[in-house]
Amino acid sequence: MTTTFARVRTSWIGCGAAVLVLVLDVLTKGWAVSALSDGRDIHIIWTLHFALTHNEGMAFSTGTNVGPFIGMLAIVVIAILLLTMRKQGNVMSVIATGCIIGGALGNVVDRVFRGSGFMGGAVVDFIDLRWWPVFNVADIGIVCGALAVAYSMIVSQPEVLEGTE
Image (cartoon, rainbow, N blue to C red; front, side):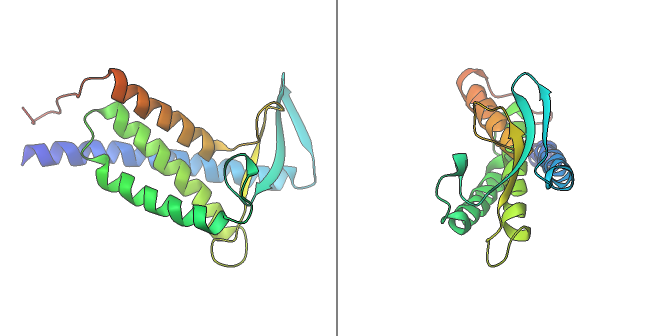
């Protein structure tokens, strides 16, 4: 019984990470749409700029006609990650998985609410490095989460959760 409790408790940490990434993504995209819709470009430092773009496709703005498919695929991936999160062996991979889920949800929210038709919306991107495709906070959550999961799989030993010994 305590094993299930410990895993469920750990899963809540991952869900918290997902919610944090989702909320940050929604808030920053809302700011970007309101502050940058007039075509304004804000230089931050070095090559970092904030400039609004809308991505109707997938990564690197490729596949502009596959947005609805990508959105549905993201929903399937989110469901699988949610179902498998409590089976993960350490807290780092649970948090990383939560970041992936939150980022995927952030981009799905754009596809659902920022357009017309089924999954017809465009993802809001605004972080522009000038030497890399424009991205958003959701993309940061997905990439950092995936890197952390990979790192965790390579070097970490599973942690013993309280009450599972």
